[in-house]
Every structure is written in C-alpha cells, then in structure tokens.
Image 1 (cartoon, one colour):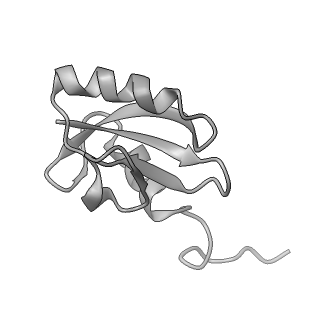
Image 2: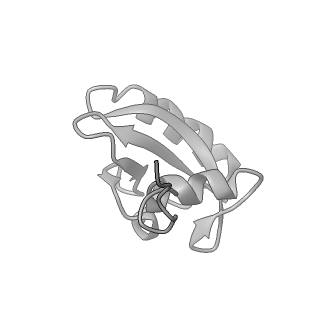
Length: 91
C-alpha cells in the first residue's frame, strides 16, 4: 500500500494526498493506494505545484510509514531529531 506525500508550498509542512483529491497534514487521512492508483495519483499531485512541491510515493504499513525509507518518513512526519532531546554542548 502506498500514498503520495509532498511539502506544502506556503510553509514547507509535510502533506499527504487524500482519497478525495485534497491535501492534509494528517497521515491518518492519507489515501491508501494500490500500485495502479499510486502512479495516477502521483501524476495528478505533481501537477499541483502551486500547492505542493516534491510529490513522491511512500510505502505504508497500517497507519505508519513503511518500506526501506520508514525512518526518513517518520522524521519528516514528526519533525527534526535535534533540539531539546539532546544535551547541549558547552563551548
């Protein structure tokens, strides 16, 4: 199962294509696509460069990113891995 993801042009947020042809920031609302639907949906999404940039397909496993790039997509979904969780170096 796949879905289409991109970044919103106005603010760079990660967005997903819904089954109704809209864009959402919620992975749970993303369209679940089989192989035939995935390519057609990606083609349509790629033509919406006034809304979303860098559209591509990702694998889904239930309600989370899957496939070989699951970690990358998880980071895109939840945000940077630096900041308050890491100790700050003293200079």
